[in-house]
Image (cartoon, rainbow, N blue to C red; front, side):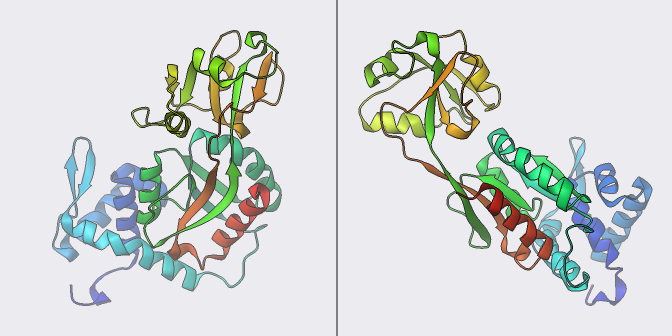
Length: 298
């Protein structure tokens, strides 16, 4: 194909969805089209581009090298066209939009309880689709255009990915109050004597807490390692376990639990939102980022 004359540009929208979903039925659902219509569009694309584009592998579709080459620029090109053709101005009260967000369950606990009430009042037609993945996968999804915004702790980002600090998070300890000698805190010796709980999606790596301890020449016993922030505090009551975790997910009081400062220094970390630079000029995207900054900024 040497020009655009022989192709319906709507076919590129279908290709974008197929490359993102890698499944005809899911792509059809995403596009609000029938499965036969999407299959027919894929057949036309294969003919026009003289390439199979997506081949079946283990119940899904795997893109060919040619499809990957096209896909690397396709989303950015289509987003530019959408922004160019979008109505001037932005009104959150009438905007109809679905944002795809990626975050851990920690991020969900911190972000969604404050974001959803605001959206229901100020932008009632804006929908959210939230997914969870590792930091590396979330950054890759932003880069590939699969995700509008991702939240977490990121480093070594591609130059085309923007980031903005939302707040600094510190660590705190949680223990059953009845297990504490003074009912409030513990010293380093007692801390090291106790068994510990760790929240980590990748338990094979050394956590920030354990790095800080290693710097002091110490090591703690991890009795429990789980990937879920939300349930972790509820596992501490009635045990001798100590949970050292991001302070915003720990209960302030109640249930016989006590929150206290760690008996050694653990560096705070920046919680950020990241997006691709192609979203910079999108008024709806700008609005959402600014609302998050206002809600969470600290």
